[in-house]
Length: 196
Ligand code: NI
Image (cartoon, rainbow, N blue to C red; front, top):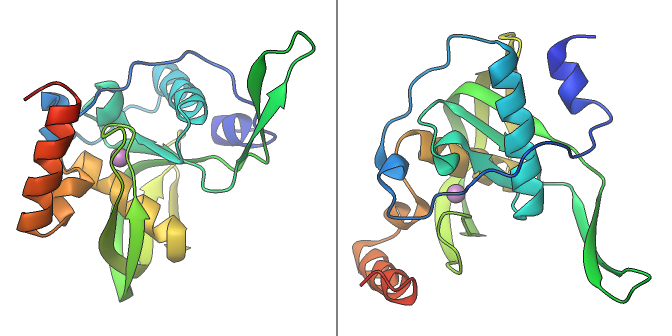
């Protein structure tokens, strides 16, 4: 079995929880570098990013968000998260129905249409806003082995890929809003975060 299948098939979360950088951390504004070496370190990083994403919880996480300026993101738009009460009365969450994706060196081709979707971001906690994106896209990417793939996406999958790909270009979703909205929301966000 190849390493890509090894990570993704019958997935169950394991790994290390990584620190998620929040806006306006400088790493979130950099253009990320292409990945050229498909080695064990990359596989470990992908596993740790998935683990971090599931436990945040979030449906996507790009490498710049954990402080690495490289062209990689992980996603899962299908998993379930359910609150459960343990025998000792403490609350916990149970995750199920995993469908993880790892996209390395992605390149997006816009196909057609427009979609308005409310987005959030682990790097902008507490902020949600509707963003206009292309509805249908084609994305060319590599897996952890370096093999090339193409994926057709629409709806939430397409929105999520475009959001994560923006992180590789040093763009957070705030920058996809009108100037008026962006200025208002940025001020409010920085004030809430105690940064201004
Ligand atoms: Ni994000």
